[in-house]
Length: 87
Image 1 (cartoon, one colour):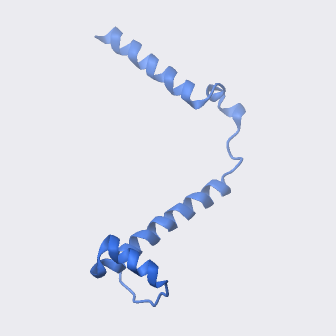
Image 2 (cartoon, helix red, strand yellow; image 1 turned 90 degrees about the horizontal axis):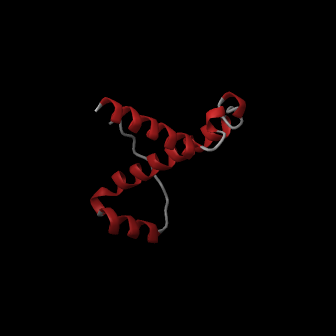
Image 3 (tube, one colour; image 1 turned 180 degrees about the vertical axis):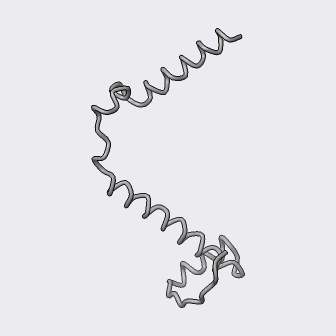
């Protein structure tokens, strides 16, 4: 992993106890790092969704008019038909 840097973080005693219970006292940093990475990924995803809102134009994708589920179902049915023809 990247270079490490020590930092001071203040959290409630209850939170430390819960972290210790879940990960063990010797793995606090690992646990907190994983939790922070996961939250950063979630927030980056939400920001990307907000930034790209409205970028999709329904007229450019008429195949989804009946919904994505219907489109996927049709693709699968076509694949099954082709497979039966081949076999």
